[in-house]
Length: 290
Ligand SMILES: C=C1C[C@]23C[C@@]1(O)CC[C@H]2[C@@]12CC[C@H](O)[C@@](C)(C(=O)O1)[C@H]2[C@@H]3C(=O)O
Ligand SMILES: O=C(O)CCC(=O)C(=O)O
Ligand SMILES: [Fe+2]
Image 1 (spheres, rainbow, N blue to C red):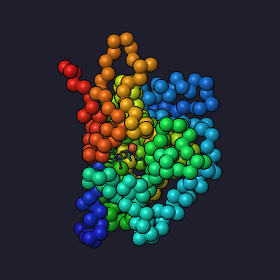
Image 2: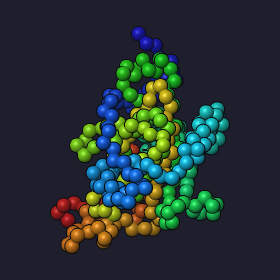
Image 3: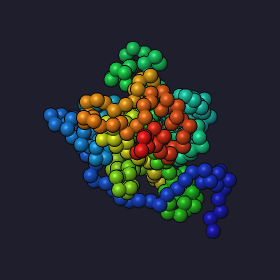
């Protein structure tokens, strides 16, 4: 019989688990930015999966490694020290609690704003008009054999299933697996990690702007029991006052928008009232008989 200590029990009671899926997906679209057809491949990947990986991106490994080292330095510091940078409302350190509505995961994170008004001139985002937040996530390895045993073969959820509300998310992680995406047929597949590349995923707003042509892909992170995962994600969103409506350039003649009109500010407010796994965009879909 496994006897569990109180802190371990507290952790387990809060955090969801799922059956481990070793469904490693080898079909992730790869976009080579040095290829003249890169744009076409991006469009196809956004339609088919809402997800792709970018190679030949021009960001040096040395720079990425330095960022990762700095992130780990922070996450390895004493808990009390880290807490001094929290809570994350709206920016700062958070531990296990994700968002304001009771979601929890086996994750700690550091949340920065990349909105121009918070940044010095030389640190402003590359794409003018697009700015949102930058997340550093740390999914610790399972701390003890006690916890591993108590899980009895199940995986701890690091970051529960969700879609990202913004336009596009750019993710770089270390070489620890954990990220999974949900395919069109509902199957969850594991994305093989690649610390040399960037992964891009379509968010809800881009799905609306393409009137459903691009897919806001559902994804989640399972914690690895042996190795910590460190990820950095840039969430690119529109300015707050921007109307999120299908682009006229993608619409065919006579095509109706599938969504009610809303601004990014309205969507963001609404999203923060939902739980992680909720269908946030559902609230803005036009009913078919409208
Ligand atoms: C439960 C929540 C966490 C989240 C805000 C929300 O109320 C619903 C959207 C969530 C999400 C998912 C993608 C990103 O990780 C995130 C930062 C975002 O913009 O929307 C999180 C929010 C969060 O963790 O605060
Ligand atoms: O940490 C990761 O790999 C992904 C996390 C994520 O999906 C998110 O923060 O929205
Ligand atoms: Fe996400």
